[in-house]
Length: 446
Image (cartoon, rainbow, N blue to C red; front, side):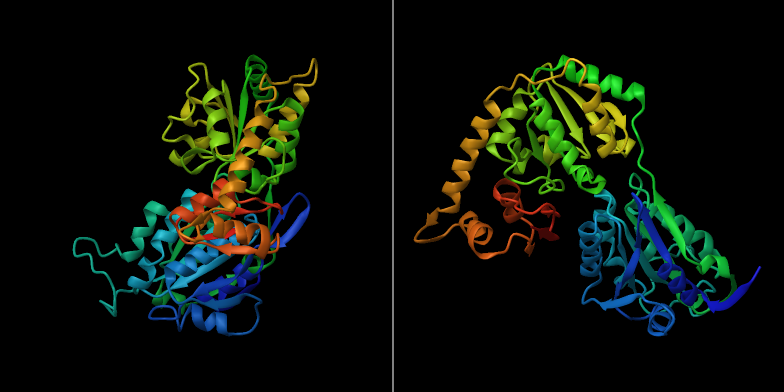
């Protein structure tokens, strides 16, 4: 077995530079680069490795570690989770600044690799600058705060541990059902320790996304529920976008005359002008979407985690006969709200269920209600887009000016949290597929 002697940090950079993702026959370089701030614990380890030649990773200096983590989330989401950024930090407060971003990445299943520096594994320079001392357990550092918000967490206390740590990190980052924040803590001294790494560790590695097809029994159960329903109602979640299932969902709704509404993560996967699109759903949703949701006797939740904003804290679906059909690659989400779970890829599941409905056909009993509610809501959005308040522009009018007159259809917007993202979910008219919203101050793309 051939080996190359490198520091742990150098091996990490070489490893990240050679990771690729294959999805539907298309290979993509998985790790684009690194966000971070050079400081105590990383500048002479990982910083030195990034500054050296021999790799193609780009480094982007942040101004705040939390902001860098949020930017990494935006990059991964804009890339449909096919490309990611790593985020590095110094020891202690710098690392802790990233915890909120890690939690949001995990909740929303967005792949981000966090590489916080850690105190000395040898414990000789102890305590180091900004080290959090735990007097009852010397193994605990500030980076243990990431455990609760990471899909995978590890600490590389010896240089050879990097190999198993990073293979497991990639396992989680490339898994559509398990992905989220991955945290690998890097003690300052270990970053600079040399080891004879096997060449195979840093060679080109391709990770494959395998679409999980629904079983025949799952399709049969879904078809039975749909045929028994008069007013099926589809929720388009972020998983529809990541699966590339927008066309399948639109075709399903058109073929079977089912309305659909969008979560904040799912918004923009299908265009505003689609005849079955009722815009946003739930607490921050449209009047059209929420009116029909109350009447639905079957909710087909596709690629959504059914958060409280989407379901109005489980109050929205008021038909006493209403049942839930959960289609999600993540079993945890497919089972929510006592749903019949279809743990499968959204694209394959929607196509299979629609085909299975063909013998005898199936059309909902919504009639012209969908067109009527869409027209009513369009009229309301037109009114809001022309509304003036005390001689000036209302907030929604300002959005309307941007949406209809100022910005090109493929413009990228960045919004703070609060009422503006809520208004965008309701009234933003998506003209190019891919508009979406990320909560709490993260980018809005349109």
